[in-house]
Length: 134
Image (cartoon, rainbow, N blue to C red; front, side, top):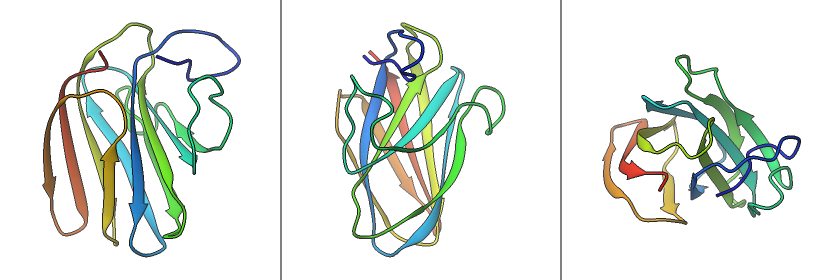
């Protein structure tokens, strides 16, 4: 658990992923869920006790209906950490993480274990997680 904002201390479940790209490129990150989600992108490292350290992008509502959505230019020689969390405290539920772009994306789960299904189309990777944020 961590607080997605250093200004207001609250406990939120989260999932984190290491994201790497083959070539420098813009990627679009978004969520699809019945729960209100927030997405945060970190450069190199993520420290749950210091949520603003290394933070390079974050969004709460741009995807509509309580979903995050943001576009960011990723460089192939940098490790990124994507953190997906809930807006409310102690919330659990299913979600789909969608990553779109013109380059190959490697993503590795860093915390927790969930039931995972991954589908890749030409320019999109769909990652479905069931019974998460626990």
